[in-house]
Image 1 (cartoon, rainbow, N blue to C red):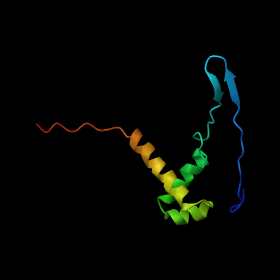
Image 2: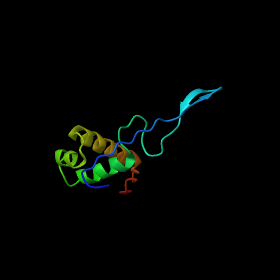
Image 3: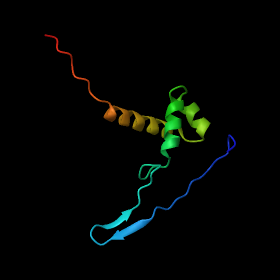
Image 4: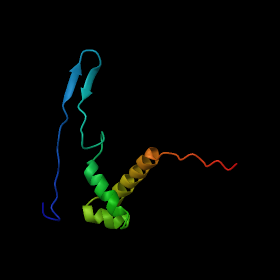
Length: 92
């Protein structure tokens, strides 16, 4: 895809009615529920935001700077949740 071209991905998830548990929507392997961006785009935006300002990153991807801030905040939250706490050394 040429640089500067935009792409819109529209997908309507299938809904299944199950007798025991009701209606369920299929999981999408490329995004979080109700997210407006894919994991790949989110990762690329966060990686670029390490080197550029939010506004420069937003301009590069054609999105709002608030979206960049939200994606970065979400990535930091996931990183902190996944980080394993190291035990404190025994100082005795």
